[in-house]
Image (cartoon, rainbow, N blue to C red):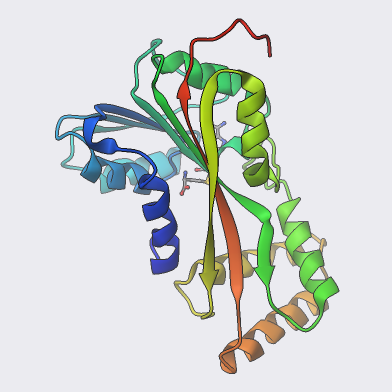
Length: 256
Ligand SMILES: C[S@@+](CC[C@H](N)C(=O)[O-])C[C@H]1O[C@@H](n2cnc3c(N)ncnc32)[C@H](O)[C@@H]1O
């Protein structure tokens, strides 16, 4: 998440919390730690910042890129398997684009609630993959490619839900464990160039051809169309990021 448009999404997400009094943060599904390093800039100079991810390679990269900052710790662990932390041990639990991969989301939210003290903050951000809008001549083809991608459960995912963004609200509401609000920000790009967020996503769609979900002819036609729009300065891509920010409330004994 290091190109300018995508960076503006991170800036927006991080602006939803006052980090100045935060002394401990847990990032679930932290990947290579980009968000946590950005959070490190905003928190206490001695804050405890912990990232968890199942991907050991991503954790190695996170550790390498965070050398020299002893506040940051990265742990290879499955966040769906109970969190390996004491109750009330973090001020903030942050998580971006992980929740769709968690099979038992209700149990996961109970774990997030357990590691937060009453009043602790959860910030859970998720793109809604079905919200990807790409202009093109053939509406049916663009819809087919976007929807097929949104519904594709990739090998590294134990679960997937292309609608996780719009479903953050109901997932947190039904838990009865948090009081919060949902917020959304749309990323828009009008340049189709390497380094752009959508350049990577649209090139990711090529994997659908390798899996027989979209034909090579369909993908090439879709891609050519985008290139032609871009050559004329008419290309447009957008995707919406939903963000739930809430505080842990004392549970009313509501069963999940
Ligand atoms: C789409 S990436 C998001 C990475 C990062 N949060 C970001 O927004 O750039 C999802 C991450 O969740 C991790 N992940 C998937 N299932 C997980 C699980 N059960 N426990 C911990 N991490 C998981 C993946 O390895 C991957 O790094």
